[in-house]
Image (cartoon, one colour):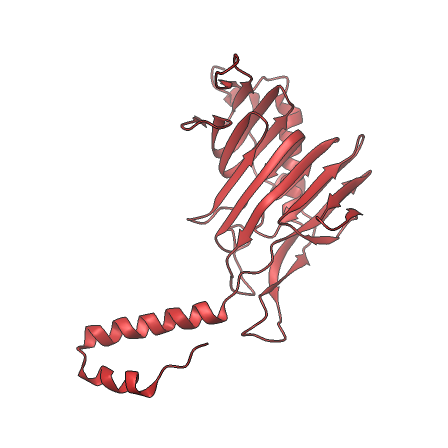
Length: 285
């Protein structure tokens, strides 16, 4: 932290009160900037059935239950006949269907206070950009705070997520985004605008003609598909309620960035996850 020269403090006696307030706020801002560093974003493996791996950029490791990894720049891959669920340090649960690959290209978090009591709201502003080249994931987010950005891209689409429960399915030829609850916008990859989904709706994105944008069709979630989609979201919600991240003690409060550490909690009853949409509530029924 830079020292404030005494001569600068003395001259404030000749400033009006409003000017002194501005200087005080600027000095406080410099103090926060000098002593605050963004924590390293992480993810926690809440459940694993079968075999899944994480590529950290330096090595490939097997996922194991309750293991923790730095999140940004990693690639998580679930093998055939396997599933897993992770929890990001911003409180988002992600369930992976078999043969799914998720690339966490960007995940930044601002510092937050330790020993927080509201575990249903995101602990701080975060920026998350992920890419799903293939496979299926179910998401269950906490309540995102103002300023947070969460996007999931596929070979054909980009999904802006504002919450709360959704499933994204991706292949080379098709992307399906099914919104169970919350608010998302779906757009064809590389194109502006987008379609805002309502709970109970599904966006189906397919390749357009050569030189044309992908085709986006909005429809009600097929009733036959709904139970399986709800199950994936439920698994993600159950995962995110098994753990939360808190700030661990640091050796050097002014130089070391905050250390995020997972805190396991008592497993929840599936009935406590919250309501999911029923087929009778789908648009058009």
